[in-house]
Image 1 (cartoon, one colour):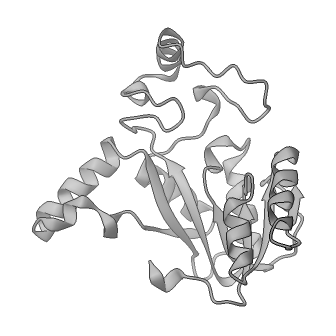
Image 2 (cartoon, rainbow, N blue to C red; image 1 turned 180 degrees about the horizontal axis):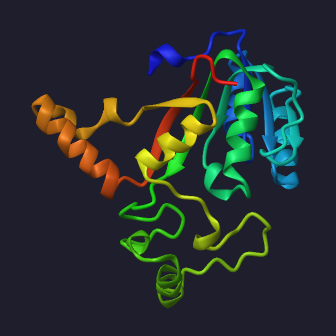
Length: 221
């Protein structure tokens, strides 16, 4: 993982920056970073947080499917807890590919379609059910989200993927993926063949969130 750490002069886009915790920490460490989020209030909070440290953080409001940046504008894009919420995941990945330079990378999280415990509703087994039944189960357990915030969604409105399914989807958008979870897996203590088999089973049928690096496929448009 350390080999993907940004150099001090790297141009970084924090896509889905939320309230700016990561962006401000990076700026305090001397990195050039732009925060970008769909939620206007979050961007205001991020800028306020930066001002506490006498920093002027660029925090822009907009949708990830239409980034207001030039081609090849960044060397690194971070996109955590965003993909499942956007309207058009394909447009999001295409935009990330567009704004990354040729050797750029993106760090992204992707929710497992068969997560044992759903990361948003914190219920076991709900993702093993068809979505209509899953939402009835969520209502039965009184976990339905009733907040008026515009970024709250039903389970059926979010985008979850199997690992292999996302790998194919990313490839269609010009990316190959690397699994960052595997090197930190609790199964690494076993002999390699057994450890890998256990890890792949857990990744398919239990893991909540994939932590991935996206790298541009050479020759991809």
